[in-house]
Image (cartoon, rainbow, N blue to C red; front, top):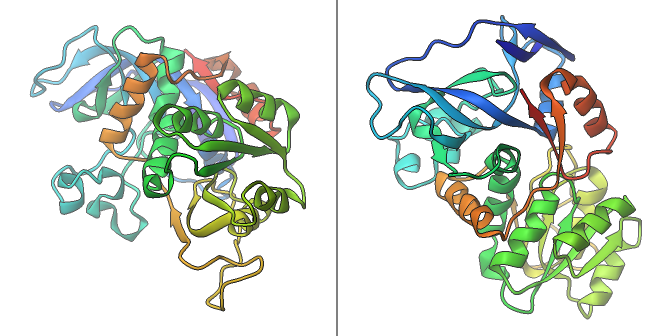
Amino acid sequence: MRALQLTGPGTLELRETPVPEIGPTDLLLRVGAAGLCHSDLHVLAVPVTLRAEPMTLGHEIAGTIEAVGAEVEGRAVGERGLVYLCWSCGVCRECVSGNENVCLAAGRAAMPPCPGLGPDGGMAEYVRIPANSFVPIGEMEFDQAAPLADAALTSYHAIRGAREELRPGATAVVVGVGGLGHVAVQILKAITAVRIVAVDIAPDKLELAGECGADLGLRADGETATRILELTDGRGAEAVFDFVGNDATARLSVEAVAPNGAYRMVGLAGGNPGIDAGPAGGPGLPWGATVRKSYAGTKSDLLACVALARSGALRMSVERFDLADGPTAVDRLERGLVRGRAVLIP
């Protein structure tokens, strides 16, 4: 089969590899679509080899069951579904509590094995997956389903973790209207009655935010926090979701969040929000505001995302690429040219 593989630091190659062999508790999935994420760019940027042999990228995967392991019950060849990306132990206290994304077996890093980040991922014609990671999607299009596995899952989890602040009439700010941000706008629109303010540096991304249901779009600059404070009578937004995570957006989030508000770090750009233990006031973090680094989501969160998509409340903006054009898609994503989510089709 063909697979898009990391063969060395920063080196991505389309290679011929054997179709994976499955174990008794696995499924073999014929890939219908695989999303491309900024996390993949981070993997490409790592200056060391993540494992000795080439690794197939791709953690947003949808497809059709091609083969079923001998001990698997309840799954059948031909079923269509997507892959829950946290391959957790399933038996620790976090997993049985429904917090599979912070499985104890993953230690302090709290990142369970994930396809494309250790195990081979779905940017290929076939992928081996644990049977319990399969989530049925019915007749949903594969290019719509695949990004649910991360772009929707991660957005939904971050929003659910701030639900206490998302009361009717509150203001929620979405910083960065990319693959995750344009989904977050739709989720906020579908499950809350808040005013949604989108922030981005690109006019076309703000246009996309409006199409997704944002009430207002703000061009990111040095005055963005001031404008958010003006919109909220000087109080700040009850929730700020930062899907970029660089220094500028981290500081914006701190300056724009309200007292007792929720600041959720989602983007991975290594930004420093400048939070200290000094008295609250001015541009610093206000009293009562919470900060949470939000990673992926639970399987229950993913089921909710699938339900939203199947109801029509959630629709991905996608750019489709052939698997062989993966490097082109990566280049477009790095340059900020993808509108929504890039999806590779084997």
